Length: 362
Ligand code: ATP
Image 1 (cartoon, rainbow, N blue to C red):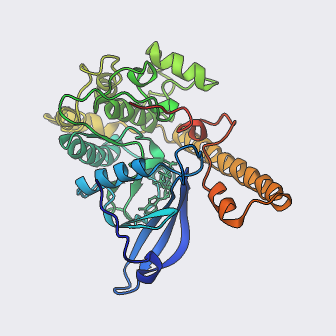
Image 2 (image 1 turned 180 degrees about the vertical axis):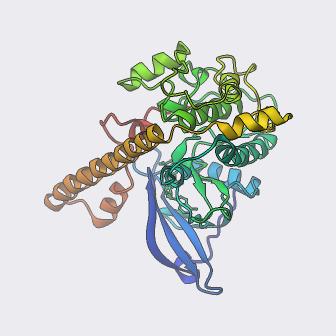
């Protein structure tokens, strides 16, 4: 069981600063260590008071996230420094990641060759490969969870974040879980079949497809249509969007978007694939000649950001309505604060919001 620091109050040791981001169960804020002046990120997670409550996170889930992070010390994985616990909240003190999301960084560029994109892919694979070597699956790999350590290239490294859905496999364990974000989940998740770390490899296939073309391979008009496309393996490399893509890159994606998880290539195998590790001069030249479809990628990213802010506005409006209700009812302030982290209790459709609501695991 994960051990939390119960003796100290986080605010005694850290000065709490600006909000860096928000998740389903709380906020991430910049924090400054009083003793050293060093800057970190504090992830403030509201904890469910009782099993029947729908507000906040189950303590067990937080413990799982902490245990996973404690097992993962790798340059491409966000590091955990400390954990604090109070009655209603757990605070994870994390490595501060200041470079923003990889996709935003790329979208600001005029153009990007496949070789440059591969440098980022390699780091993602190194982080994921390390995770898998520890029998840990992330289970929520998507652009929002791939960040950069700093804003300035070339001194920027990939950092994989958000281990809220991660799972550490015990030997011989059968693990099923129906959660994740529709665009990025493989057929075995939708079919509620036993899972393996190969789930992450499918997501990497989807991310690579998007990175190169600015298109999402299975995206339908509704989540239901997206899930149907995934089950039917209904995707193609249309000439219009993939005209600048190398054959090696397509082969790499094809080896990841494989229905049978046992047939999907692993992170280690990906690192040996000629697209990532070319063996001949011709392969190197092919990569340098090919580039990502920047015009379309920028469009995809703008739409993705718009959807994210739409979700945020929806949540804010809902909170506003809750506050109005609370003013006229006897709901105490403490309870209201808990409502503010309860973004799972929602009837909305955007996929990132229904994500955990749809989840069930065994
Ligand atoms: P979700 O509900 O999407 O799973 P979550 O509650 O698990 O989210 P995170 O995804 O871990 O929370 O963090 C929310 C946001 O906070 C991130 O999208 C990112 O913008 C920011 N963030 C998280 N960790 C860090 C960090 N270590 N440094 C800087 N920013 C961070």
